[in-house]
Length: 94
Image: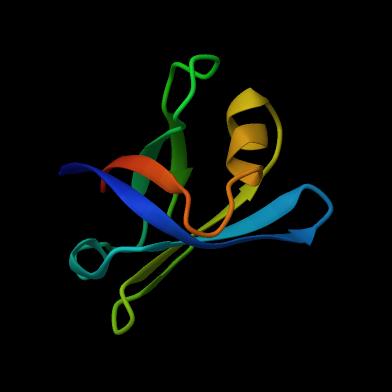
């Protein structure tokens, strides 16, 4: 299990309140398996608890981890605001 900051490559609205976030992580992508998830921590004082988000897809060749999520509360609202180049702290895979 790893605890580290990762760079947002892309975070786009797919449809309605659903978003697809892609993070860069060559070393970690190679270790991910179907059914695993990460605990994501936003960098602010409002959202204290990490958010469990399951892996949507892993591109091991390019070192990209994808998360498909629905915006429902404060944590995922903040996730949806993340832009390319921003950092997100991940704990996992679990």
